[in-house]
Each structure stands twice: as C-alpha cells, then as structure tokens.
Length: 166
Image 1 (tube, helix red, strand yellow):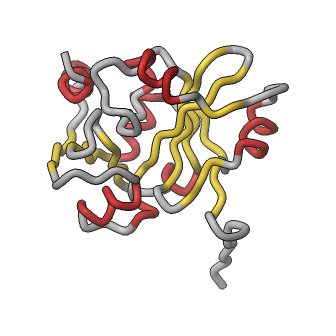
Image 2: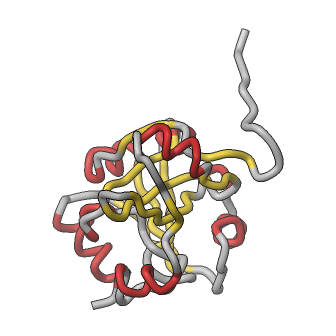
Image 3: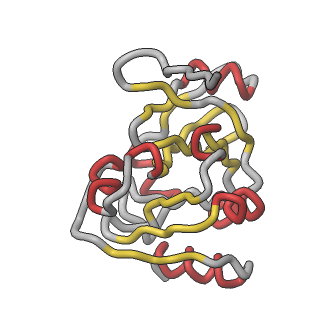
C-alpha cells in the first residue's frame, strides 16, 4: 500500500477530517506551497533526524530549516544527525524521498512540531508523493500526533524575527 493510501486510511480510522489535493510535481516544500497557492510559512516540511534513541520527525514551515543544534538542546540529546537518503528509503517504503507525511504514529516515530505551525488554524503537508498534499485542522493534527511543540526552525538567511503587538 502506498504511503498516500496508508495516510488517508490512518486519518479515516481516527475520524479526522481532511482535504486531499493534487498538483503538478514539486520537490521542495516551498515549491509545494507555491503549487498549492499558499504562503510557505503555512506549508509543513518534514525532516527526519536520528539521535541515540532512534529516528524522529521534525516539522517546520517550508521557509525555515531545522536548526539541529537548537533541536538537540531542546530534546536533551547528546548528538543529533539528519537521516541519510538510504535510511529514508528503508524507513518510508512506498513513499517518495522528501515527501514523508508528518504522521509519526503511522511510522512509529516521535514528532517535534515548530511553534509557528502549531499556532496556525490549518496545517498542510506532503502525503507520500511530490504531487499529493493533505490539509487538516492543526488542532486535529496535534490531537492525533501528540507532537512536542517548540522552536525548532530558523530562517534560511538569519535569525528568526520576533514581533510584538502593542
């Protein structure tokens, strides 16, 4: 069964409401956001890391990258590395590399969700291919996945901006 079908069945089995959309092939999270006509900070990017306890999923907005040192410190791991492509092929059979959905329970993986995505009403993510996207309420995603929420991403070209409202 494909990762797309497994993902949809998993959501259906947990009575999660979602929308499944398709677009022309897009290979980066920012390209997917553009294909889906949404700002990149609203599109989730799934990054797979490995620490001494095993693999984990880190979910950040498409326009951020995972700050490995910040994540390592936040989770208290002595070491942390990005998973290699060969590891991804073994972990996510039936899934196109780079299109892993952040459904940790489907793969037996811990999930760490960036605070920026956690605070949004909806979340969208790849569904196993470079053409399929799942959109769902973030509250449902958090209830299903039970992620650890924190600041795990950084802007590609400098520190993350902080804004305060008067």
